[in-house]
Length: 333
Image (tube, rainbow, N blue to C red; front, side, top):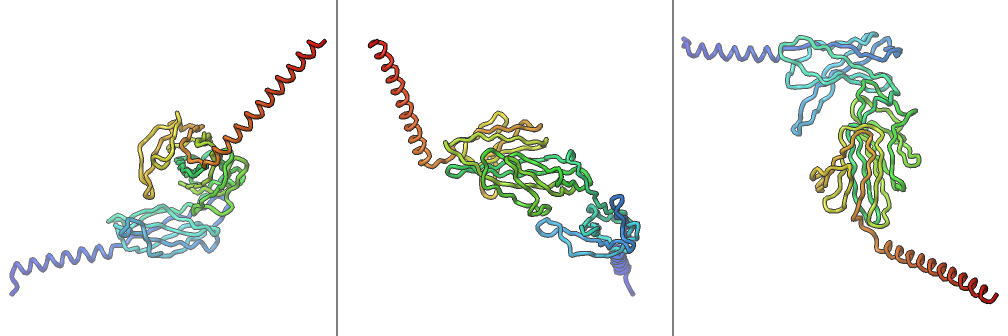
């Protein structure tokens, strides 16, 4: 004979098992549409679409094991994934490929109790609307060598639209200092090897800018003769944040357009930081001092000054002799 206590315990265990089993079997349907630009039809056999599941790994990064379900759209771009196991702790994304380019939806999650989720994949159209481009953040890193300064510019360009902005016919351009040398461009994942050119004192980017942020990084040097240099830069776009950074106690930075904002550590180096105060199309002027200079530079400068003094002395002597000659001529006459 089973006691009441044992019977209650057994019922409770069965209830918990039923709840877990019910949650484990809970599924959800995902449907939506691949939306393509006007005038670009979807093939008659549709587009292949996949449902990707993402989880946070031990480092806090999103990882995926690949597609958990596959489907095909109809000619109108509509798709559906049926009976997807519900996992409220995961994030999901629908992906496809259109005209050779990968496209995907925004991330979304399932909520307990849902039976259906609707999410669209929007294929961006190509635009040349350069006026939409914004410079959301600009950072200028200044380092010194013997007789030169190295400038690294990190520019975060924002495309706030849903379109891909093509700048090949109307390039995105930024000024470079007079006399710049050794230009290098670090390419991000969205760029290509021929995405820029240098014309005089401007670097121009000819490329696509996807919706959202794109980071441009380029580096160059400028020669310094007498331990100081005046940098003049014009940023042609409004920006939300602008900063100047340099290793602590290495250089003297002076500008009415900068406000000292302390220091920070980056890559093991302690950097002094300044904020750019005028963010509306700023024309930045910075005086940079304490640049290490090769002693030969001062030697050549001294020789140059000495030669100039000799020339001036000779000119002065010739002038005096000429005047003395005229004076003697008048006296003899």
